[in-house]
Length: 151
Image 1 (tube, rainbow, N blue to C red):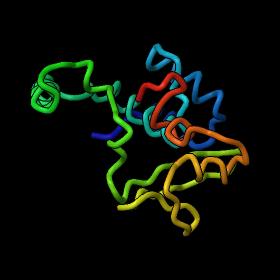
Image 2: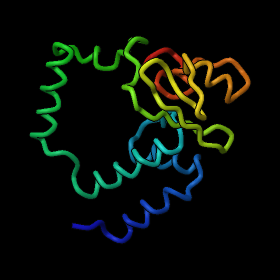
Image 3: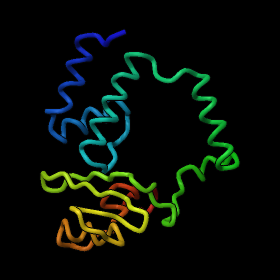
Image 4: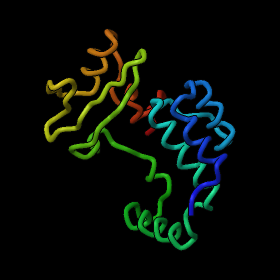
């Protein structure tokens, strides 16, 4: 089953939309303020949402199964699902993407730290400082933690 033509056009237009346009679409499709993540994240989530609305999203049985798996991991406490301790960093091999001043920055999580532009770093904050020239919380800069400290 393929998407209707208007939905396919809407998906294709995500690539050329400005960031403010993407944020406006986010507000329209999710009825919330957009997160402070990079452009690629907004595009991918908007594309998923457009398709979800066209096809109907996950089946109820899939949602129930995911909820059960979540309960197994956190003992049924939904508040714990959003908590991320700093020691729980992304899995080795994860690529973190961040657009800064029109340039996409890609960081790879390694077994003992992070890699950016072929160089190893011990912290995301050091990478954020190298990119921006100012001090940043690396977790916040790469969208792993919001400005209030929540993940």
